[in-house]
Length: 330
Picture 1 (cartoon, rainbow, N blue to C red):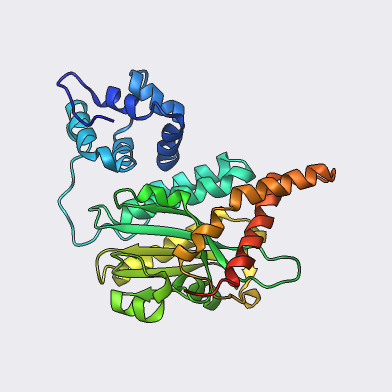
Picture 2 (cartoon, one colour):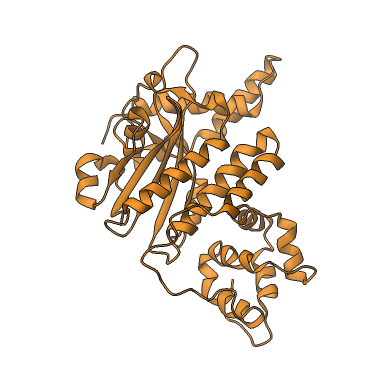
C-alpha cells in the first residue's frame, strides 16, 4: 500500500487500510492475542486500545513501524516512548504475564489451548529478550508422532516468532530437524545446547546455520524425564546469551510445558533421531503436504472410512519425514 501520510490521517484510519484483508487482520490479532473484532473497533473509534496494546501492534507491522509510530504519537504521545536502555531487560517473568498465560490456559478449549498458550509465550520471549530489536528468532519444534511401535525419528518446526523485519513469515514455515541439528541434540540429550558464536555453530551444526546467525540456544521442553520438543532462539548479536538470559529462557521453557497434554511427551530413550537434509533440500517435499492430505481424505471417503483432517495431517507428516530421512545430502 502507499506509505505516504497526509496531515488528516490518523493511526486508526491507517490501521483500517492495513487490516482490510481478513487474513492480515487475523494474523495481527493472533500475534497480539486479541480478537480481530477488537482491531476493527479501534479503527472505527468504537473502542480504545490500552497503552500496553500499542507496542505489540507496532511490532506486528514491521513494514509500517515508522508511519504507525508517528500517527499513534498524535493521539497517545507517551505510549511508544522507549525507556532509557538498561544493561539488560528485567530477568524475571512478570506476574502479569503469568496471569495472561493462566487466562489463556483456562479460557480456551482443549483443542485451542495448545496454540493459544505457546503463541502467547513465543511472542513474549521476543518482546522480553529483545526490546531494542537487535534481531531475535524464536522457533518451537515438536517431536513428530511415530507410527505405532516405532521410535521418534525427528522434530518439526510448528511455529516461530521474530523481531526481524519480515520475520513474521516464519510462523507459516515448517522444517524437520534430526540428530544433525542443535534442536535435535537438545531433545535427544535432555539438556540445553548453547552456542555463543558463528564459528562454533558452523563447526557443530553446519547443515542448519542461518544467515546472520551469530549465536543460538536450544532448550528441551521437559516434563520429568519426557520431552515434547525444543525451543530454539537465534540472535544476530554474538555472545548475546548471558547467564541471566539463559536462566530467564529456562523459566519460559518451564512455563511452555503448560501448552501441552501428557501424550505430547515422549520418554527420551524413545528418541532415535535420523539425519535430516538442510532446509533448502526439504522445500520441494514439504510443498506436497496439502495435496497429500487431500489425497488421504479422498481415499478414506471413497472407502467409507472416517479420517479426520488432523489424522490425515499426522499421516502425511510421517510420510514426509520418511522421505526426508532417505534424501541424500547434497
